[in-house]
Length: 111
Ligand SMILES: [Cu+2]
Image (cartoon, rainbow, N blue to C red; front, side, top):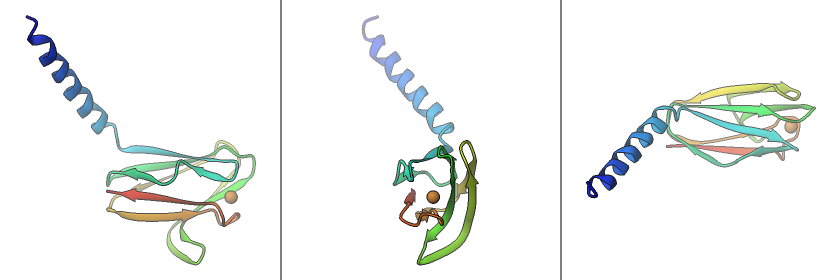
């Protein structure tokens, strides 16, 4: 009886871990006070990342760097509550920035 308790706990942990992994295909980045938060983030291939603007002004989510745009996405978020989502299907390191405030930079590391 006593020995079964840790076993049940282990089964429970294993079960909740797989449930989390199955739901793990989304990740969020906030855009707040001229910053992408959090950054960098690490996600699994296939993760859909959603940026949500929490500022009252327009920011953009633009792939690459101002010096080297890669053309994957370039989306304006015109004010508070606007969002943009992009699914990263391949492993790699992806940089992005705001085209209106080019010191705003972020990075997604896809494993
Ligand atoms: Cu901006």
